[in-house]
Image: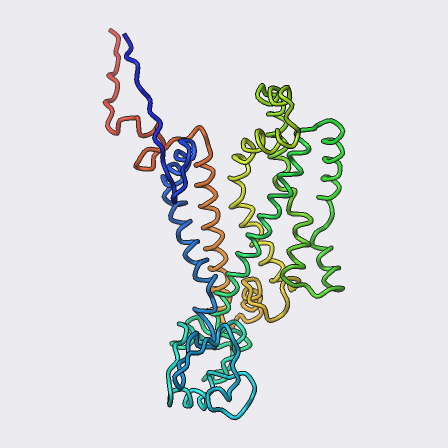
Length: 381
């Protein structure tokens, strides 16, 4: 006789939001992948530091107390006359004369690194690029700018570029794949022929041609890359919609009079999102790599912008300063490795065939005893 078990579904919350048992299972699987879980926290910590780069690396103090008043130079430009100087121009807080004026009637709180990505260190003891020192932890580049400051600002630009490009590409790609897969027929056929032609265009040559006409910047590069990057998710979403459009619940929704838009984005799209979520970290890594490659060959962000690709190009041009190339290489390698590990964990989290136990091992592996007795050898006489 088989006893019937009572299955109770617990109401769980995550960050104050009530989640379903499926979402709880996915979060458990993601956390069970320790490499991906800790990679996410490391990446978020680095990104949070880079996001507030002005408070970490800047040639201006973020708080000044002078003659009974408080000033915030990071948010507002103050003339030198406000601190007893002689000029109406913006205050140079690294000038020893200005520092002496402020110290006489107040104090300043500086960031951890007293350089931003554009600050030129005029007091270097050796010609630029200078090697690492107590003042410049990773040295300076060939224009006497602090490498740590440029690394922090360049990491922020790269990740923000990748996040915006990934989000916009996902929206366009999911919408295009949904329309193709749901309607099928001539709509699917014409869209597929258009994608085949559009994907065959030489993206790099177009960027080079347009860069000779218009000076590239952050939003210009984002718009150009968005024209081609949205095609990565179309096939995945299209396949999910082709598979699900003839399911019983879709036919029932049509019979009840639901519109095509409601069926697509309310009933079928959640199933396709599961397949696309696993691709997002890899798309983000590809977007960052694209910007780095464009900056490396000189067709990316404007000259002087903090960029990981520009740092790699300086390392290539200054082989006598190995700290430039090594810093750029390890920065890109660590960032891409973290994103790949996060992507692997997301893939495990959304894989319905994988269920992990508390020790991070798959359930079928954990169910096998560690020291199972070997089967007895059968010998015949």
